[in-house]
Image (tube, rainbow, N blue to C red; front, side, top):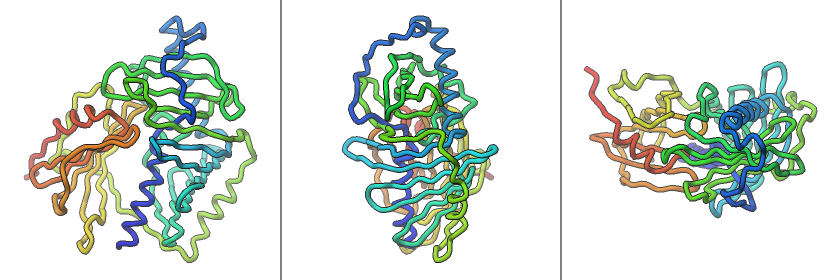
Length: 347
């Protein structure tokens, strides 16, 4: 079980590089002046940016592309290579880390296969997040521009492609801002930044090289998915639940954040002890996201908070439970969610 836990932790570090919007190697100033004609008319800018956000999200799902992108969070830098192919409404994807421990993640639609070579383990799960770079919107039904002021900036070039540049400035203090560079022709997101209220870049991801419209290699990906001889298969226990049925309620009054998923996970957290059940509720405003984890207080932890890049964490004790709040949002947002959590034992 120690091997599985260490593998799980390693896998989590990989997903950090995917879960978050990401960034620019040479940061430009947040105060760049919008120069496109549409940026002078808020209604026109909103309509155009909304169309671009939809195009960016769809391009990540429907375009064939192969490239290398760099993820940066503070002093942490990680390069990954991604191959994505779409065919008749289905997606096939391979992601490989190029730095540190070798990691490979294969995906066929919603089925995700995460390979941990040093332990010969494959984790098989359903995809939980659809906003990993170069995808964008966490939940398509949200009108994200109700919570971000859109600005179109002067076009720039990224990885050899002419790009539309979009600023999304938060309308309140409960979310970070974003700057996006999208290929003018395909709409594929080629660079993304997450910035704080002072305009400091918290995280960034950028393609250093990418080819768009390449021939499909879906058969190669499917062949690797099916060739699991010699690997140990691990399927984490996850099931959909309703928090209300378990006695928990979360009624944070944070504009725009809607619940998109509630699940129960069976996890091994304590060395030498059995698995425990952890409840997770996921919230998103369409761009930003956060999770609330609830677990029995069967292990020693410390209350507190911290951050790395755009990701903030808050740990609190609630009666005989530990609450862990984690997300790409300001600490104030987590505090507001935490203050709204209540528990009444189900009779």
